[in-house]
Image (cartoon, rainbow, N blue to C red; front, side, top):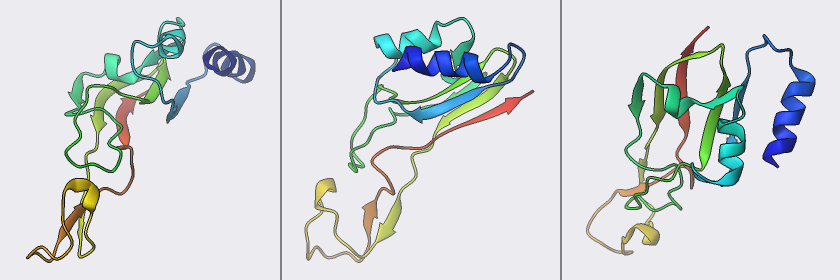
Length: 130
């Protein structure tokens, strides 16, 4: 997994190339696959490098607006030549007339709008300088 990803990056990119690796890794910070990449010496966790962090929760929500965690399973890794200015987990939601029972809403409640999440993972965004 993580070792193969690093091997492919080394194979495809030169030492001075700027590399951004993103994905739903399904492993939290501190796990062995995460550490394999973050401690590789050439790819770094953008969260750790960011001057400003907006991470009010982890990245997995399971479509539950009330879920709160400190586990980030979606990561953005960058090579050392990239300066990470800002990191953010974007906790967007939207309203709909369709009931979302997973959020504790009950069909027929006296309301016209129900809260929904567009994905079971929150998106992660970074702002970088080269």
